[in-house]
Image 1 (cartoon, rainbow, N blue to C red):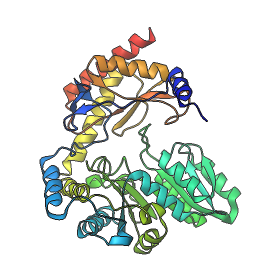
Image 2: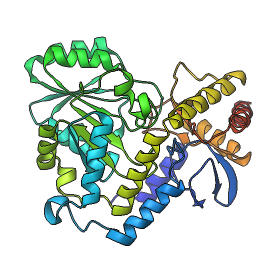
Image 3: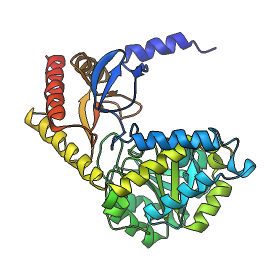
Image 4: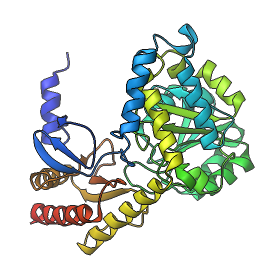
Length: 386
């Protein structure tokens, strides 16, 4: 029998043991974390909608009118109107023919990738794709060829080696730990040339990039050119769940072939209604996307003034790479003592030797808060290094 205590001790020694922290109260730019007031700088609540009054009211009203749970898989007990209505709206928002709701972004990527590829096919996956995409590739039982991060020359070479067995190129659009953007135009061109499908994960782009927050695909002028766009409801839209936007025939196929849809209870009614309210707010107030971009630029500029290397990214995700896992944890804890919560990210989430503080700007952060945070983080980095 495996000794789990020994495993935990190994994780502790390597600086990789994790624990949860208790947040008292709603998500926002400031939270009570383990009883201590801190500036929250690692949340995916990018537009600050998780606690918006209209989003909360929509969830509460839906629970009172329609109940909380959906009861079963939609293929067993039927589709509730609240699910279908949100799917129609998300399809229109993404410029797609249809959309299909999933219980989470993890389930969506797992189901979509495994449905679009099968044993004997080849899937081409970016080296820094999210774990949910990696696991979807494994579930598909297809051969997986991993191309160097955002390297379309390497991708083209791998496609050529695969011959006519290729089935799918899959990538994040905004990479969750680095904040950079995939070369979507080049990927689509390769897919057209070799008759491959393309699936992208817009988890960190939906609500954050592009016209009206429609994502990196829309920002690149590629609306209608991607086979499947996965997006989440639990980040910029402030709720929980996910969706796949695609052509109607593809959605019908996923409804039948995506195991994580077929065998999962439908997303809870209040979460779906809340996401719908958040989508309405985004459509009414596209300036929220501009505010997020301004906050991201302010955070990067403040860190640069403090001498921190923020790379060449431009999105709301800013990695401060420190290398060693233990150093990342100590820096996180020291910044937390000084009132700033910036989570340490360690392997296996990121490659060995690239542990970091993963910072995330929110539209509700003020420039003054971000200036203070940058100063605090720089001081923590210096203190740990000395």
